[in-house]
Length: 300
Ligand code: NAP
Image 1 (spheres, protein in one colour):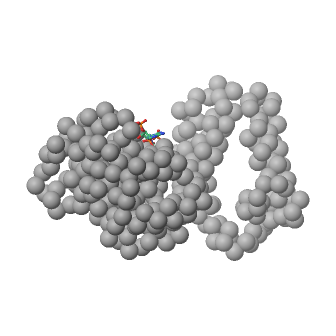
Image 2 (tube, protein in one colour):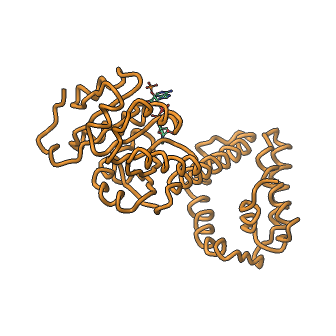
Image 3 (spheres, helix red, strand yellow):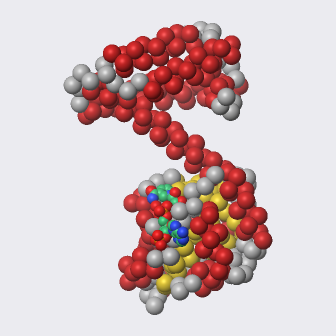
């Protein structure tokens, strides 16, 4: 039974399919904003708290999709979306499907054709925040696909977070997602390895974070990358204030220091290998950012 505030009649009804931690947060944010909200999940009990807040629990996927002009899918992956939609018949016809499952660019392209066969308008998306931050305007949700579909439903998308449209290529949202998550893991590993290094001398993570995260990253790393981003686009890496050869020597020192201190050394070894490859390809006299030329190629 639904129990919506009267303002909800102004807002687009939305269906959320998939009530893991993220789907629960999405449905909760939509309810909070006042959207008439229908939910479906393989394990129906996960909807219990949403139902007490006014959500409608659909008995089938077809019923769920038919209840709203917009359906949000938030499942484990694209394969799960296809599997659970098999029983939905033509329920998606004439409706909008917003796919927030994690996937790959090829999966996103394939989903466009799948949605078109079912007569649905399709937006692909990626959520860049954990569930507790859903619903805040500063929480970025990435979208790609037809601009008109995004524009028409922007207000609804805003109920879940800050929507950012990346372009009509449907794969852009999941591609950005992989890029940003890859950067997040590399950054975290960089800090964790560095903290293990100073930790080998008894320095605490809290003490090191003060210098590494409060000063080094914002004052040295970020401005350097921002200033040099145009050189990545132009493929111009002047080595006048530091060459790849010099950086290889720094990476050699980090590797040897790791070994001396009894700390895992695979990470600096990998960075050293990449710098060596850049030198082998003729970038020894250029600055370190020329490793970008290595990253742009498939692994050997
Ligand atoms: P999840 O474990 O990735 O997905 C759980 C959902 O998938 C549940 O609704 C689950 O149903 C359903 N599911 C799994 N296998 C199924 C199957 N064979 N048939 C039917 N339903 C199935 O949990 P999540 O954290 O909510 O993530 C959902 C999506 O959001 C994922 O693609 C994830 O990558 C993305 N995401 C998550 C976060 C995060 O911090 N959690 C952040 C950004 C993006 P049951 O409840 O019945 O098991």
